[in-house]
Structures are given as C-alpha cells and as structure tokens.
Image (cartoon, rainbow, N blue to C red; front, top):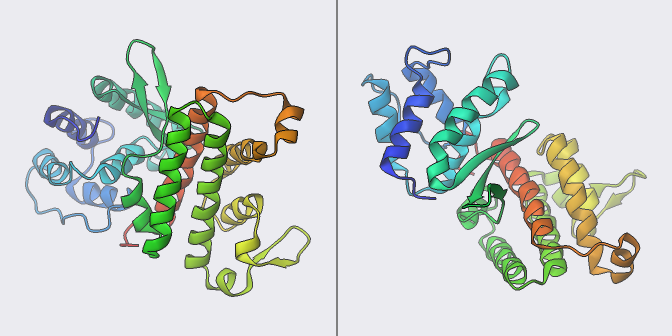
Length: 284
C-alpha cells in the first residue's frame, strides 16, 4: 500500500531502468518517460547514474500516490513499447512480482493498465475509489467547489458500499462520473461550455441537461477517453439507472459488493484517460 516501502521503490527503479536489458532507457529517456506518465515537472536528468537518479526522483515523490501510480501504469502500457502488448505484459508481470507484497497489482483491460488491491488469502483483485482522488481531480478541474462536491459524492458512495446499500452505491458512482465529465467537458471545451453538446439527432443540448450517455459519447468522440473505457462506462451507466426500481426489476439483478467493485474499475480507467489527455506535461 502507499506510500510504498523503500525496497519496493528500489526494485521498481531497476525494472524501469532495465540496465543491459531489452527495455533499457537512457537518462534522457527516463526523463521523457516521466513526462509521458503525466508528471508535470519532472527533474531534468543531470548525468548521474540512472538508477540512482530515478531512485532519488521517486523517493522525493513517494508520498504522492497519483504520480507513482501514473508511472506504474505507463510502464505497463502497450503504447510505451514498439511491439505493444507483448512487451507490456512481460513488464507488467515483473512489476506485479514487486507489488504483490504491498497488496497491489496492475491489471490490464485491453490497453488500460489499472492499479488494484489484492485481498489477502482470497487471491482476488478489488477496485475502489482512488485514495488520492481529490488531488487527481484538482489536476483536471480548476473549479475548487466542483472538486469538493465530487469528493463528497465519492465519500457518500463509499458509505453506501460499506453498509450494503449497493444499488445506491452504483447510483453514486454514475452520478460521480456524470458530474466529472460535465466539469471536464465544459472547462476544457469553450464551445461546449457556450453552446452545449451535440446529441445523436444533431440538436444541441445544454451541458447541464446532457445525459450521462451523451457525456460519455462526447468525451470518447473527442478522444479524451478510449474505447474500452467508454464501453465499460456504458455498463456503469446501465447500473446507475437502477435508481428506477422498474428497470432493476426488469433486469432481475440484485447488485452486491463485487458489482460495485467492478464499477470502480471503469471510473479509474476514465480518470487515467483524462489525466493522459490533460495532465501530461502540464499543470492542469
């Protein structure tokens, strides 16, 4: 768990540098890797031994979970390697060996590496709201009041989850994503803020009246979230609609803790994509 143990950071550093291995990175490439992982102001490589430089860099940021997590996701991403998934999977296996004692694991949904937690003695992976959610939201959204409301909605959702109110936890997750996408779309697209979103029939819909489906579709059409995140989020949207008991009865589905956990995974994927779009190399 975070913060990672110093020995864990040391072992991860060796994997990332891979001296003498097929994925060896020069000092300059290490610096560029941090930029691609979304670090806004990584230190400039100063010519010191690479493992030492990267180790000190990670140690300086070891309390910032979002930075460490973004780097772990990046080194396990197929887009980082010329041959894509083949190399990414090999690296992910090595990273997971190091993370296992920490109770953490990097999973992969198509092109999306996602950090999850390992449940002791159960050999299963769980997803939940990111522990550093507020810090990550502040990088995406400048409206401090909106961030406060989003964090509060996530906290209320977790209260529902922890007390067995699983339908309302699903509603909370959907509500959280809806407002997250609304804030990001209106802040980062002036035309949407002024004129609204374009619905499937070609008509414009005021942003504050847009459905979750339209918000998801728009974010994907703009390239801000990838296809797999959109597809998984569509399922979250369907479950969010269980706020209408009629729909839940039609589906004859009684959500449980696993249902809620599986819906946090797509939320993390959406956050990852938005951070890749807006936070890499900037201080958004």
